[in-house]
Length: 308
Ligand code: NAD
Ligand code: MG
Image 1: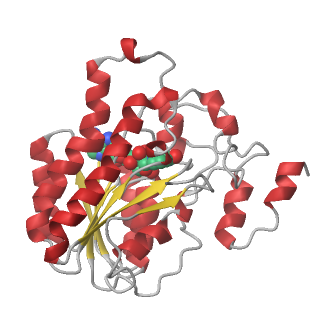
Image 2: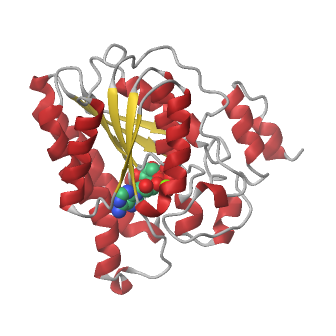
Image 3: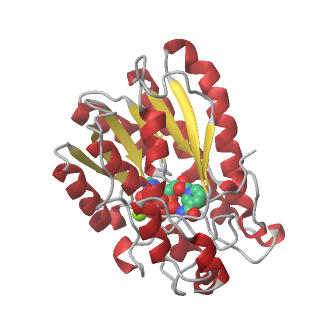
């Protein structure tokens, strides 16, 4: 057992124990790469979405949620947790992620809740409108919107080499889609409803390789606070979760494979997080009773990196 491994012990929860077991001594994973958007089945090891561990307590009983990027990674963990807390769930995702989406839907149904699958590219304004409309129609209304879909591409070249088409993919996925979808969903949200946006540690400690992505995450924080002020009088809360390094398909799909060997090792907790470790933050923020007075906040789940 090296020093870092011994520093990690003792783990205090089943999830943290499983998460630590999934990482290597540098906190990371075997080198590997995929084409974006990346698929769960091609990851080694498979991420932990709480399939075997998340226990619900009816905290979201009867709610209806739309989770973008709910097919995989953090979105899948949130979908599983929401379902086990008693919510029906619609997930949006890219058509090439159908197999991941179906697996998430299967977990939602096993929890006894409805799963609605909404494939489509959210970089299109009309798709955002359609996804919102179909989620509302098929779930019979909407109480929670989780703007979780996101894209990044790590680059070793600087701003002068940044191509507009690459910027477009990042800005449209992370920002335009969030604006379009939230705008389309808002008329359907009532008192007690909430919106949860997915920010990042990159909003606070931007990596040189993620100039465009980090900019969008800072903007998402600003959007969160600003929109919370706008819709507060309607009894709608708006919050964000800022993840640190988390083991999801996004990572092998958007950076050089070797970087994954130490992925997460630079956090105070010394390892990457698993999607399962994010879900409770979303459950809390979505809960109309537990988070009834929580709005305009960014909840960091970063392995110890600061979010202020
Ligand atoms: P992921 O790849 O599992 O999820 C991202 C999802 O975004 C994809 O599954 C895909 O369905 C969706 N998406 C991407 N482009 C889309 C498009 N054009 N149209 C529709 N859907 C699209 O990876 P993840 O890490 O779970 O990412 C979820 C969120 O977490 C993202 O916003 C990401 O920026 C954020 N985040 C991740 C990390 C991390 O280390 N994994 C860290 C900080 C923030
Ligand atoms: Mg995916």
